[in-house]
Image 1: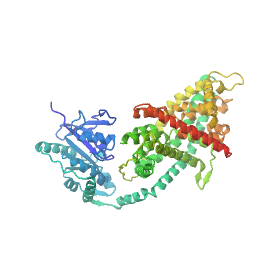
Image 2: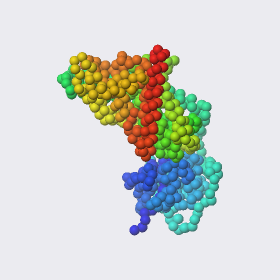
Image 3: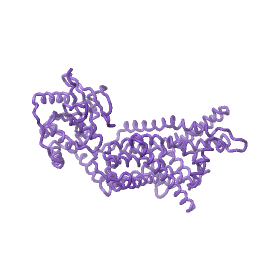
Image 4: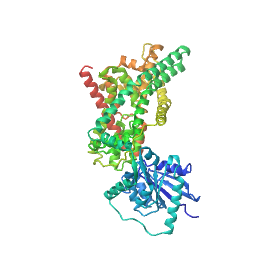
Length: 617
C-alpha cells in the first residue's frame, strides 16, 4: 500500500488558512496534538482533481522559519521534516492575504527558497478588490516562479484550480528530481524584494485604500495613538453606566416583583425561602448586571472587527517595553479583560519562557468581566449619580479608575517580576495590521449572544450552586429568640472568624462572608451579599429591597472603597488558578501568584480604608 501524499498549508497568521483548510477538507478532519507540545495538529483529507486523496495539514501561522514561538517551531519542524513520525510534505501550499501582500511575501520567499514543490493561494482576493486593490496574479506568478491561484475560501472560489495546481506540482516534482533550492538571501533583501514584487502585482488602487494608510499614520502615531486609545476606553466606561442603567433598573424591578409575587402567593416555609432568598435574591442580583456586560463586550467586539484592536496592541508595545514585556503580551492580557482563563492560555504564542511566565502571573490583574457586577453594584450604591465635570459621570469615572488601577498594578507587578524571579528583557514582536472594515451587525449580534450566554450559564450553574450552598449555611441552625440569623448560622460562624483577619482593613462580617464563595467566581460576591441580607431581613418586604439600597444603608464610603480595592487585586477564581497550574506544569507559580495578589489586595484595601477614613469620607 503506497503512502498517502501530504500537502501543508503554510502562511502568516490571518491569511485565511483555516477557512481554506475547511473548504478543501469539509468534515474530513481530525485534530490532535503534536508529540511533546501543546500545539494542535489539524489534518484532513483533500481530493485532487484526479480523485486521488491527499492528507492536508493546516500549520500554525508563522512569520519566518526562524521560530519565535512554540507555534512557529512546529511549523518549521513540519516544513523541514524534522518532526519524528511526521513525513516531509510533498507540496507546500503558501496562503497569502491579497490585501496584505507585501507583508506576506517576506515569509513566502523564504518557503520558495527551499526549492520544494510549491503552489501559492492568493486568498481573500475579493476583500482586496472591495477595498480598492486590484492585483495581477500572472505578474505575481512570474515574479515568484511558482503557480499562483486566486482563491476566495469562504465562497469556495478557485478551489478546483488549486487542486489542479497541486496535482501538477507533484507531477513536476516526480519528473524532475533535481534540487532546485534557491540561493539564500537575507531578511532585508527579502523585504525589499517583497515590496517590489507587491508593487509590480498591483494593477490599481483606489483612494479608499490610501485613506486606510493615512488613518494608520494618526492611530499608530507614537504621540497621538496612546491618547486616542485611552480616550476611547474612557468613553466605553462612561457608556457602561449611562447606557445600561435603564435596562439594569428594569431587570432589578422585575426581580423584586418576582420576590413579592412569590411571597404573596406561596406558603411560607423552606421552599419559599429557598426561592426568594436564595434563587431570586442571590442569583437575580447578578443577572441584573447583564446590560453592563453586553455594552462592554459590544465595544470590545467593535474594536476587534473594525481592525483597531491589533493597532491598540502595537500602541501598547512601546509602553510594555518599559516593564520588560512586549506587544506579544498585550493580546493575552487583553483577552483577560473578558476572562483570565483564555488570556493565560493565549500566552502559548509567547516564545520567551520568562516573558510568558510573567504574563501568566499578571493576567489576573486585568479587570475581567466577572468583576463588573461587583464594581457596578458597589459604585451604584455609594457613588452618587452626578456629573464630575461637563458630561462626564462620576460613576463611570470611578469605574474607569478601577480598570486603570488594575492595568497600572499589572505593569508594576511585571516590572518587579522581570527584575527578580523572571529576570529578563523585552523581546520584539511582529504584528500584522488587519484591514479597516465596518463591523457586520450579524457578527456583532452572534458575539454578544455568545458572551451573554456564557454569563447566564455561569449564573445558572456556578453562581446558582454556590448561592444555594451559602443559603443553606446561612439558614441553619435556626436562630433563637432575639438572635440574628446570620450570626447563628454555620456561615456566620465562619465569617465571624474571618472577620477578625479583615477587620483592620475595614471589612465587616458580611463583607468577610462574601469573600469565601467568591473564590468560585467573582460575581458570587454580589449574590452572597444579596442572600445574606435577604436571610437577615426581618420581614418579607425587606427581602425585595434592592441590594444597592441595602449597601448604601449598611456600608460607609471608606468600607465600600476598600472592598473595591480588594477586588482590583484579589485572584478570586479557582478556575484561573487551575489553568495557571496546567500552563506552568506545577503548583509553584500559581502559589506565588496567589500569595502576591492576596498580599496586594490586603495592603491596598487597608490603605484605601485608612486614607478614606482619615480625610473624612
